[in-house]
Length: 469
Image 1 (cartoon, helix red, strand yellow):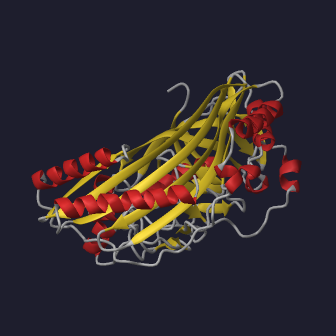
Image 2 (cartoon, helix red, strand yellow; image 1 turned 60 degrees about the vertical axis):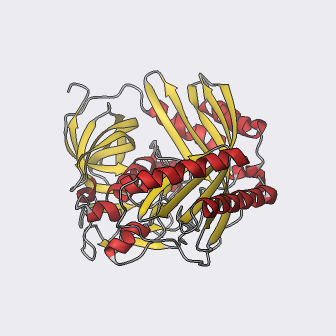
Image 3 (cartoon, rainbow, N blue to C red; image 1 turned 30 degrees about the vertical axis):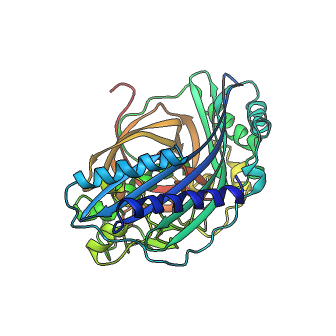
């Protein structure tokens, strides 16, 4: 994708607005045109088995007329396709119930810039991705491996009938792979802005080290354990807290744990959403065209704000924070690039080399060295909410768990089920250490959502089941 495609997207958005004006002259309308060029190389049993290339443009329309709101979308961007989408959306608006909470359109506003995409990443070929896969497979040194390498570039154009315009172009590269030694899996996962920064050999070596360290796991009884959560596990915590906690709709519905102005976290916890400071793809406006900047959700343990779109921001009397997302009428606004600020003190690389642990990075190994007895956890998965108000989550460990004794990883542990309030795990006094390395990790909710997550040493995590039940 290039500047010509950005211009084509702008022409498409203007054409939709012209069609809306012709059909319903007094309607308020906003259009989002998103063009995606995705390249995905998948591997299993240590060889590439699939390469996918997908180029598509999606046009979304939201209009408000006669006190009623409706949305429509199409991937048919010729004249007939756009006309049909507008006609369907106008008809849907006339049949929709009144919308008394319609908050109007974003006025013409300057949008901050985000760094231009790396053109080598945007133009990546299957051979470029295959080279990273080859490096990963070579690094696992005979173990089975599986995963993917992906490159993607997005061109996004917004326009509304109030005269506001915004556009962006962004790209990212990501890799997610496992190495398997018998029944033991090791994980490596990362998102970067530049494909050149995606080191398949480093990720493969990390996954293999974890897999080999996971042989012959022992079973531990359920209970409360001190834990060191690696960044891949912390990313799930950030995702849950962002979507179901710092969400203006969830707060208005009284389903959020967040209390603005209250000390709800340990002083070591500061949560920030900043599209200009992530390693993955992001853009500096939301799907309503509202500019996005640096938003501090929690500062040294104090909950400061929640995410708002125009609707929830008007209801709260604060305005939008620029966090409107597709499906937001039901889901609410979501922080898409949430970061837990790492410990600013760098960890010496020697900590990892001397420890002999399967830690993801040196700062994880440093946290492990301070634990008397606890668990090192690679990943939390299949997580589901049991109690929205307190954000009690249940899930399973995955891709490596180890027992820590006197600051040393002593043996692998079979997977455990946990039932844990995420805010309580981060409460004052509960956070014993924060890692100094914060990689960007992908969200399971969709593209361009990502999390910067350092490791965490926590005083307690509640494990409620093991392999025996």
